[in-house]
Image (cartoon, rainbow, N blue to C red):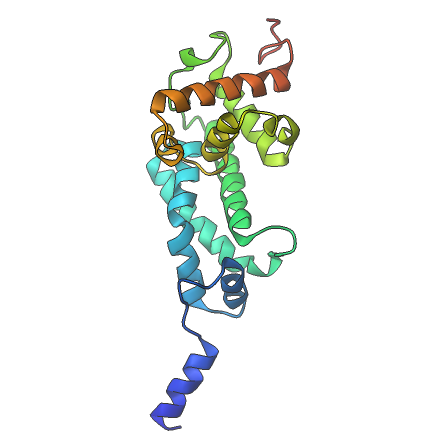
Length: 213
């Protein structure tokens, strides 16, 4: 085959990935075996997947490893993606979130953590008796399975956006402040007031562990 024909065939079988191509189109190409499509998805979402992984796992090495695992899963399971049910972005980030939660539970069972840090000290919670790590874990799980969707959308817009950026997309409070164009103090206020509302929805008149307020 002449060189010109070979180049033409290559361009047909492996079209150039441009920045304008949608995530959903990249998923289709990935299912057809395009390594360029996987590389493009990695460039778009690796940082965000890493942020989610680190926020959940609290360990840089574990977060880095999970990023690699997630994109291997994206490649392996691309044919299970259904664009009629959710955007590709949501599919990838939900996969990252669920895998990170699963890995955190595994690491906790192996006594990997001596303590579970939040971005701020547990004493910043409205009720100092609340077990911060248990509260965060409960909210993580409830947001993951949709159990708090109704009350989540009853929060103020600032509270809702702050908790969404923190729990779902993995941003730090400083990054959220920059995204919202607000001070870190304001974002911290939205964060803890929103958490308090979710805590009441989760536990009612009791604190984690069954203690009455």
